[in-house]
Image 1 (cartoon, rainbow, N blue to C red):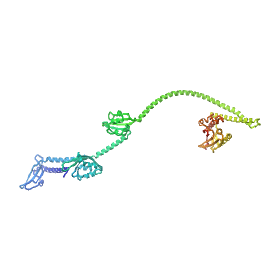
Image 2 (image 1 turned 90 degrees about the vertical axis):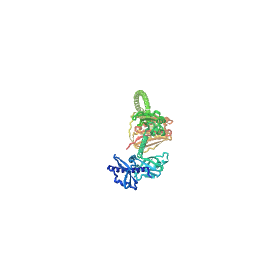
Image 3 (image 1 turned 60 degrees about the horizontal axis):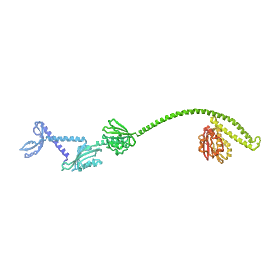
Length: 620
């Protein structure tokens, strides 16, 4: 049994043979020969008893120049060859139709091949599939046989597309009795060809059974283009997603096409609230923006720009432009920081204006104060002049006092020493000797005070000069200890010399000795009986430090800042027993500072006091 396409090919073959015969008859006619060509006589079937034995298709060349196809029969009658031409019917229309069929079939094959489209016919009763030549060309296979088994086709199918292949056979059970599916077939070069198959069940001759007939189109280029478009769209989505601004595209009907997550972040909307297809009004209503969102009314080159404040407090600058298709593109930039800066600038401007007003007021006050300062400066200059005059008077007084007081004091001290020693004989009464001792002690104390006052005056006047020379501190310390040891014994206070070997210093011996005597005398004076005094020293980085530590009454923390100022004393029960001018520490500090050193006082009330001073060592 032949399938439809095979029967068509058979008819095409018969038509070709008929045309060839017609051409031969026309050739005979063109030679104006009225007899049958000898070459055709053998083709007449000769019979017996005058019966027509065979029929022959011939072409008769007529007087009008046209050829007509005839059916002739040949027979023998009475020993003579009688050729009777019996015109059965004109077959010109049939031959032309068959020739047109051949030509149309060729055009059909060319069109299908150019369109990358093939035909297949699945005979379900025989379970064989007919493929057209274009089908074989699309998969790069040689056309060994046009009839394939379904398994041979499945062997070419992609493993993931088997269900799509089976979709074709299931068309028989569908109400529509049709199929429309897409699958991949392997090309001869190993690549995969995308096919789109579409067809239906054709019953035709019920005796022959059902057939699945349809076409298959090569859509590989379409799939490649779709993949490229998908990749481009994915890149576009990634680019839109990764920009720092909000982006949204609306179509011509005002429906959302695409948007990035920044828009949802700015509008405080979920992804579902901004799904494609949702209208612009709905999105803006959900965001609480309303009509504040700009709309570009002009052409593609015009852009609508506006600034809106969202319910979240964020500020957005929205730029909108029309697309060629009538839609709109929005780009939103977060300008919250700029707005905050503008607000801050406004506040700063107001604050600056207030500051300017305050400054103007302050300027007027400063002018007034300047006038007052000028007056004070003039008064200060006047007072300074007076103070300098007074200071000069004081200096002159101290100079005179140095002469007027020291001379009689020296005489008093000298005569009291003579009286006490009995140089010119014993005094009449023991009381006189006691009085002489008191006079000597008081005179000596008064002389020391006068010397301290004079030295302090010289330092303040800048007239104190030092005779700096290399000085061995151990010698000065020993001399100072000898001078105060008697007082310490009387006060029942022990003095420990713990001074290590120290470098030689560049200093005035008399000044250093005076500092040590002042510090040791104060320590003895303010240390109760049974207490102790420790003399320590150290040398670091060219600086020599000497410290006098005692276990005396100590100094209150509140009084430490004023200790060391001229004529300052701390009032206490113990200090009341030992009157003085309070010049000792002040004079010592001034003498140390004249050497480029420092004097520090550390004390804890009821525990003791440490007074230390530094002097520069001589570096080799």
